[in-house]
Image: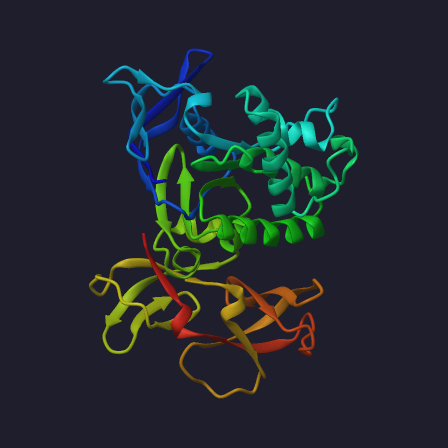
Length: 362
């Protein structure tokens, strides 16, 4: 079920000030895909989610779910949450402590006065889908964090919603469980072929779960694309910085040709395969991620995109070394294999892969 959002605005008022939580948001969320709203705290992503559900009343604009307009300020339409055909998984799961697993999952069907036999059949089917067979009589709050998350997912799915929405549902899990649950959730949602809207500030969740990512800042959608497009091809510094660690090196266009755009920078000439519509002298920022920087022996001959510097810091993080190298007055962050023999204070050479040198307009 496609979701269409047009001209959505939502303001809050505090101490005589107007805070624009949503600022003219125009957005189409495709049907049967996993769509993630990604951004820092306070960017408006949860407010947008709550407007879709109907828990927040926008000041203006329109929201349509499929062919039905569920909110329109101009037309005076407001469909309450329980009539929008949506399921929602909250950050805290919102599991009722006085109920067992069966009653938690069955609750949406019970409130609709579904026949008892139908409720038993649908709950059993949904618990089987989320791999909680045999947990029906367990006290819900006695389960592990990952199991509680599945109970919340089952409760959202049991009524067969047109759309399911997630408000940072994995943020309370530890790192290992979060990784396992993230994989399971991707499998569940892909099998269901349901429209899913997922809110998070965690870039790893966004990249690994999503078919499409929309990055938000100050109440607006600033960029949208597939995870690979957002990670590799963003031309906005905010997005490139938020989606992952990166080096940002200021410079000016020296020449635009084939196959490289040449940039004059503080660390020397940088060749980038990415083309931009900019004449020589235009100020730009070169963005290169640490994983696309190769460490070379210090006696490596001069060549394109080879720079020399001293290792300032080096930290072992298990699957890699992360560190900083000072090239002239510039600190460059890098990430290398854990078996690489590099030490702090050592003089080394770096190579920037021209294929992964992105150019951001200033």
